[in-house]
Image (cartoon, rainbow, N blue to C red; front, side, top):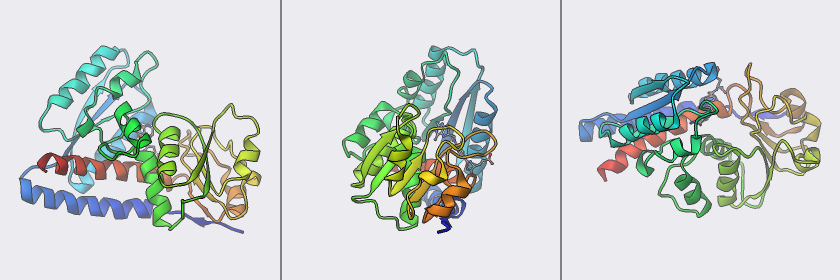
Length: 281
Ligand SMILES: Nc1nc2c(c(=O)[nH]1)N[C@@H](CN(C=O)c1ccc(C(=O)N[C@@H](CCC(=O)O)C(=O)O)cc1)CN2
């Protein structure tokens, strides 16, 4: 079997088109433009690239952006103070704090300073709890939301399917597992220390690789006919799955680049417009 590609770039483009239409309608009815604030701490080149990509996409769909770039030696209190300012700023609809921050910063404290209504990236503990409890008052974590949107776009049924998520980060693996559980999938969470990873993966109808280890998931582990979602964003645009051999066994597979990545930004912008719309209601 040779897998068909799940084209995240095309699905994201449709979502961005829809977001652009919503921005125009919002501007016409309210006279204001939705605004996303980005907070970037330090010099990590990949993080600079991602924030630049987000700001560019904002421009393309008509969302304003406001950048707050802080030096690597900033303290947790200084970063929290920046987030507090953005929470109080009436012109800001959504706040994105780029992960990872430098190691000395308490990332959880910074994320949790974002107010519920402005957490368009779905990174606060409140967002996580709401997801666990099936409440929908907060916004979803963007990459997991992008994964689910991509699965829906390709009509992949989730109910009763065995999904193996490899990765347990608070912005990707854990919320992805909760979101898929909320869609009635049977979810197993594995991670870098899991023993017998090959066996777990080989039993999955859907594999979600989100561990951040280049090509950790070998093609021969994939069950023939499975759906493979590679959410790995490793240096050199290499995914967490060995693409070629996996594509020989899978039914559907996401490429890297051009799979999950573009969906992440599309979800962020859609949720920014939702945050603006919700202020008016
Ligand atoms: N606060 C957050 N931090 C991080 C998140 C997040 O969702 N919220 N996710 C990742 C990085 N990320 C966005 O921040 C991200 C990664 C990759 C892409 C993407 O579109 N990649 C392209 C390739 C890009 C290239 O050409 O270099 C692709 O896969 O096609 C978008 C966003 C960690 N931090």
